[in-house]
Length: 184
Image (tube, rainbow, N blue to C red):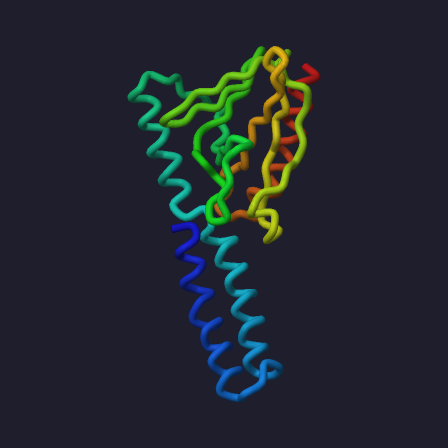
């Protein structure tokens, strides 16, 4: 739905722009202006509806985790998640879940997985690009770690806010928080 709802806002004016341009027999002119307007409307719709039903998904996942006996904490951060091998042009998030900071480790927990990374295994954090970055509406917070000789990266994107742009701003705070936690 996070892709479909914005498409509903974008597609009709985009189609109208193409039809006007075709009818007039020229790309420059009214048809182009309608296409530009449809792009702006589409971008605004992705920002507003890209995390469609986000609060509902969060609440539902909280209930599932409580039913599984997972301890609910006040410090849980709702995030989208992906392994570095995951790739999709339509959905940056392979999974959604909660990120939790404990004194000695960071934990990602979702309906289907639990990943714990010891603080001593984490080498750093940095912002990373994803498909939302192409639109200027998001990006990953990468947590770089090492397990023995194997390096890996946990990729999360905050879903704490109602809009994608607000969540992007929150990602800066999350990156700083991880860096500060690592120094503790």
